[in-house]
Image (cartoon, rainbow, N blue to C red; front, side, top):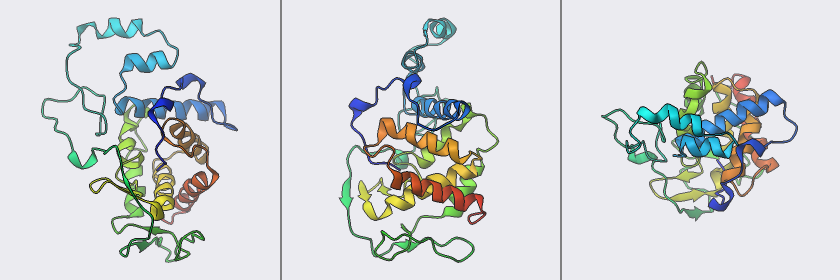
Length: 244
């Protein structure tokens, strides 16, 4: 979804992160989504409250009955940061490696992104002049997967992290098992974010605000118009029914 950013930039105060030109309600929604992802990434609730400038002492009292040594689902897995059921096992395919090898040429098995109306998505920056994606890319599935969380409260939408965050299922620019970062698939990865968020029922304003907030802590190209433009194109195509 985004170019990686050094860990030194991940300590931004959540309460001070505000994307420009967004309504108050949109900012609140985006911050809540970001907080859920931070917990899924393994950030302790205590530290999240402190990052938001909230006194964490009441949480310590509420958790008095819990065993502080109880293991939690590791970072990089669905439900990361949560206390697991006894039968939990890590999904190794979703574990994200630290470093990737850049692949700059378009792979020979790349596929053209063609919505159900049969009109390919144009990408003037692509050597084919059309949006290209890896063979595994299925944008109807991306939309449908987003739609499965549309009726859930924000507190349960952390599963989106496993779908569209860095190294997620639909982060088409990263091949996690091979530890490869494919430059030709950057646009399709950002396009997928928009398709997924539209399926999840989020407005364009919330989608872009969330992308900016996520980028602050994870991306070196935060607020890049090209990046946001492809997220918007994916959202717009999905809302118009091209991926339903």
